[in-house]
Amino acid sequence: MKKLQIVSLTLAALLLAGCGASASTSAAESVSEAASTAETAPAETPAPTEEPAAAALPDGVYTATFNTDSSMFHASEAVDGKGTLTVADGKMTFHVSLQSQKIVNLYLGKAADAPDHEADWLQPTTDTVTYSDGTSDEVYGFDIPVAAVDTDFALSILGTKGTWYDHTVSISDPEPAAAAAAEVPADGSYTCAVTLEGGSGRATVESPAALTVADGAMTAAIVWSSPNYDYMLVDGEKYLPVNTDGNSTFEIPVAALDTALAVTADTVAMGTPHEIDYTLTFDSATLTAAE
Image (cartoon, rainbow, N blue to C red; front, side, top):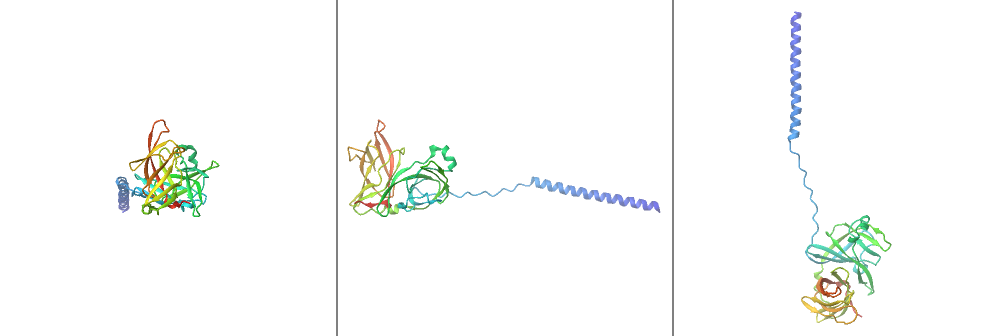
């Protein structure tokens, strides 16, 4: 009897051991299969991040607002916080007349980087602005490359004391200047701020310029910063200086205000004549009747 009990217990132990081994094997196989599945399953591809599209404008001339983060750095009150945005071949340049001549250079980027990139400093132009009371002042203006409108970008300023400061600016609310260009002032004599672009940047013209309107046609007196210009080309027509002494002065037709006028000026300053392409833009907001 005892032998039978021993045999039964032994058989039971063997059966239990077999079941345990089978369970362990099954569990191990399940873990191995799960690991294999995890290794062979394709990794999830993250959804592509869409970059915001740059605000694009058709080629043309626009009036736009100059926004800054400082009450000490802004457009002149005479231009109501605005400037001229020119788009040519998809590239945008914004010209703004500042409030004084205390900002002598600009740099697209952080102030800390500006001293090591002097070749990239934006150089000033001398602009004449006219206030609502009729008084005028000479201030510095700048041509600022713009990647996109309605987008903040870093623009550092250099003051007369030689210190760079960080600022954030943006250009917004562009409006085609063509709407204003359709209106020609009444016949009479005026002054009007004019912006020169092109060439090496060393040449300038006097601003404001004298503007005469007769029978609905506009003529501007352009006075260069040099006596070495011997003719100008406007719409294929050649114009000679109207003076013999002093800086070269020309009387040329102006098709429209607030619209870049393509001109060519020939200079003999370099020994041999060189034709240089420029644009002249007459700002209707500064138009003032001559006294």
